[in-house]
Image (cartoon, one colour):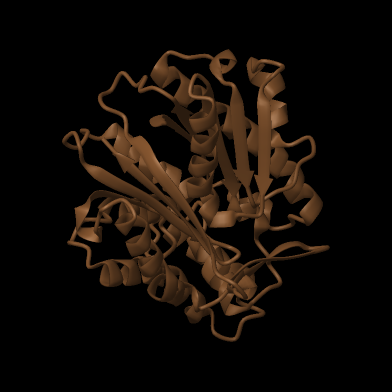
Length: 350
């Protein structure tokens, strides 16, 4: 199973963090006793700017109905762009795809976005569709795993993974909790599509081959991350324990996973990590003992785009594929964590 291409697409509205901070200060100044705290929290996430699904002024009176209508419209548009970009890298067409996984946690659609793309892009009527909701940030890595599982069973087939996350549409203007203030400064919008097939078909050099995958679920951690969904939409659940999940669970899972394949952490030459936030990445660097620069692409993605939930790790993977390929035999790992609480690890080799 080879990761042959990643296509990416973003809404046209890109807003720098200073402009966003000013907008939040104005919106919340009359209701929050310490508006300087808003700016401090937004600066601490080290995000330089983010793409937004809508022009910034349209968020002032956005309710759940209008937000979800925008999700369906924008997700279909940028999802189509990401898919076509990935296919173009391989000189392929939508009719070459045998199965599609669609992942998102920031909007609801039935028929799902992948179904709308079957009509718009002309996928074959016998395409196997697998829409997944609820995995959150881990869904990019988990989607690679599930698509790879499929191609392992059907090596002559080609699978497509599409992630679209429009986090800005989940904004809760009446929620002045610290988790919502942090989330309003951290998360951005975007789409990414990855193509997995049983043979390397990229024209840009060697493609990484998926060697193994591992899912890990951590019992009784439902309250660490997720949504509380109500009449107002998606209200963030974001515990301060998230960085500790890396320290308590992820390092041990990774060591066991690599050890099962005769490897150690120091054998990994390419790290494709989800940019969960500065504290998460700092703990990851610490417990894995990573060299300076090992997570450079992940940090760059966080600075330039914010946390795109499930699309983020695919964006980092795209940056890896766009760069000069590493030496043959180089090991890499794709990893992310998300609601459950859980993690997903994907071992690859060039």
